[in-house]
Length: 106
Image: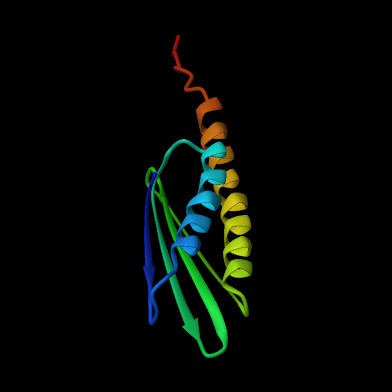
């Protein structure tokens, strides 16, 4: 999985980048079909905002979380991503279970 981290208005410290990379490794256990992920970190007034854009095959998942602490925002966003990725994975499984039956006319 390719991870791109972008910050708006400040330079992210290295420990913040490693924290995001460690959290994104948790998503690998849900789906191995994750192609890439974009993380945008910014400030909006007093809140610190995290936006994640995830691409799984032909699906795109977007999550935006805000709080007074950037690490709390990241944790909330990753939890939300886990739920959505699990839901997408379940839909793929259900789709694989469907069988196409040939109709034979007498």
